[in-house]
Length: 337
Image (cartoon, rainbow, N blue to C red):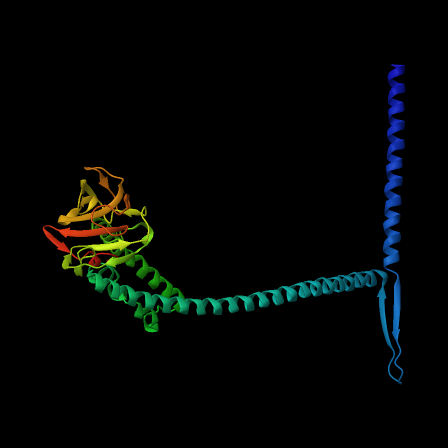
């Protein structure tokens, strides 16, 4: 029991001392705030004395009002500095945007000029294409015109009345030009196919100079001539090509099949090639042959060499073109392209 009473006594003493310390702490805090309030509540009198004989103006205030006014003025000054800096930055940004806008307008003017040049070129293209289609017999109304409808003529590109409100004229022009070019692909493809077919046709018709690389000259034309040996008038049934020397390569003037490779006293070494459409070609007075009977040859393929065999006074190539049983002038077919 004695120990219990002693512990309670110690506990009460400790609590009492702790409470007194807390009370003293809060009293000091209160005194501190009272002192601060008294300082801020200190009165001041501000007197404004005019130079003239006017009434003296007395303004009473305290420290709290003055500190509060100073804080407000400092805030206003800082805000002014901040917004002034922001205004300077905004002015620089506006100047930069104006310069960019100026450059953009210049680029737009240049784009408009290029667009006008493009439209002029497109109009020339349409005229040229129409003339080419007409010459080739291609019906333009069945392709481009039908697909484009009322906007097929490029002249509509220059009609400002058809431009939708709010849309740049250049944008509408480019759209119509794109539509025209897309639909012009078909007739251009037709031209390409026709040229391809004609290229195949020309490969089957003897239309080339029969000596490789086009060397030599025509030493005797087709038709009535004086025979170089007996000096009598006769009908020369081909063209004679001379190069001044033997050995120059002779080429096939069209695709075909070799039907004869032989020799006789008149033509010497000779080759006959059968082509399509009932056409035959003969190459005579050769020094050597490079093909055999039954071989398929292609246009420009070397088939032999110029010589002086048979009835011949100098190295040359005797070249004939036959259509069926008729002999025709080879000059009409050479470079017919």
